[in-house]
Amino acid sequence: MFSNHSESRPPIFLLAGFPGLEKHHFWISLPICSMYLVALTGNCTILFVIRTDPTLHSPMYYFLSMLALSDLGLSFATLPTMLSVLWFNHREIHFDACLIQMFFIHTFSILKSGILLSMAFDRLVAIWNPLRYVRDGHQDWGGIVLQSSYLVLPGPILMSLQEFGRMNVLSYSMSLHPDLLKLVHSDRRNSSVYGLIVMLSSTGVDSVLLVLSYALILRTVLGVASKEERSQALSTCISHLCAVLSFSIPMLGLSMIHRFGRHASPIVYIVIANAFVLVPPLMNPIVHSVKTKQILRGIFKTFQKEGVP
Image 1: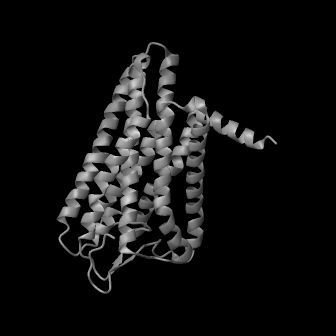
Image 2 (image 1 turned 180 degrees about the vertical axis):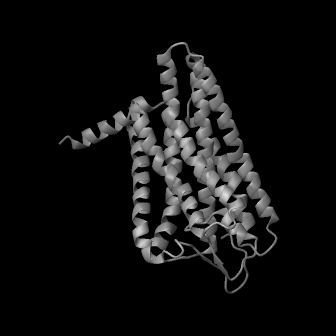
């Protein structure tokens, strides 16, 4: 679909597991599969609770459901190739499938960054002027999705125009743009520049605005007279701040290792990449379930109803 290679023998792309630990792939897959299972179950539970509890039909929980959907999308985009390598040692991936996976991974990552920024703006407006706070979280969903898709789509198209060698070994059990870029044999300036533009205009701008948003939130909260009101306002932001950190730290680590870690061990690359796709979907349902009383109460109600004969 994307490939423009005219050779009768197209280039071969091989996914990487854990180099030097191939004999232990099954045991390595156990904690990784457990993390996937917790992430999928937790995010699906949050979606179900918000969908079935009318008291949670408010902007704050609409954004939380969007965050859960983006986490599910990221997990489903990486799970098939991860398991194929660790369970069946099936490493070969078609170039078109590689580009499709790359598109979805980066789209859901940028989508999540936009959702986290919208949640920060939502909290800022709610704390800054609670009496006039009226928002519908649904209005942001379509715009963020379209923005993420349109930003990422030219990346796979440009990559499909590049030339590769006969045998191409990827660094991870998934397809990422910086990793594919290292394997290009032709002029890669267009793909490289566009990837940098996408990174700066999406997660780069979002990170700056997130910092400014929380600086304003902190300034506003500290101006609240009552300690009880101050504590209540801060508590609503803690879970969101944890979600931001669990997403931004692995993403920053992956970006830094690609630019400055040329001599790092391949295991370091793989661990950071796996943290990038596994930690945020795993941590978000745990943090929001523990820190958000309404979500925790909804989960308890759901299990109590299922337990009633």
